[in-house]
Amino acid sequence: MARALVARLAAGGPHTWRVRNALDGLTQALPAVRRLADGAESGEVRAAALSLLDGDDKTDEHTPDDVRRFLRALDDPHEPVRHEAVLGLGRWVAAAGPLPPGSEGAHRRLTALTTDASPRLRQAATSLLEALGTD
Image 1 (cartoon, rainbow, N blue to C red):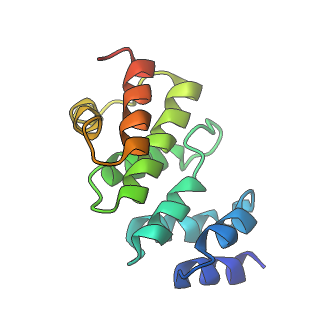
Image 2 (cartoon, one colour):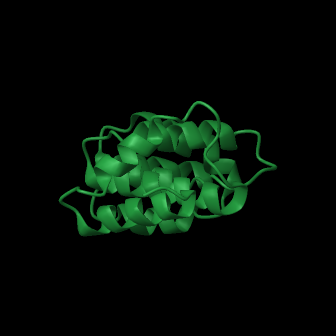
């Protein structure tokens, strides 16, 4: 079932977020979801895939890679991807505290997102910076 749902998510289309919801919690789908987050052609599919990555599961050996995915996605040209990246980083910060080593440029990128045209992205970036204790 997970494989069929991932294939459906990869196809994109009008039901992307419904398929995403069906995949929520299916850990066996995570390797394929991570591949979609890294390389799906559709920004909406990349955003949906990113939203499925916890970023706060300290027991998952792939969590550090997921945090790096979120950091890379801050520069994505598609607003939904940037938004999901900020939300994913927020999950990490809520669970683990500061951003991991190697993410020094994130503060600059998050600060830039506080002036984005998207109100939800501005709000998410501002909230994350506040959680990190920066202005």
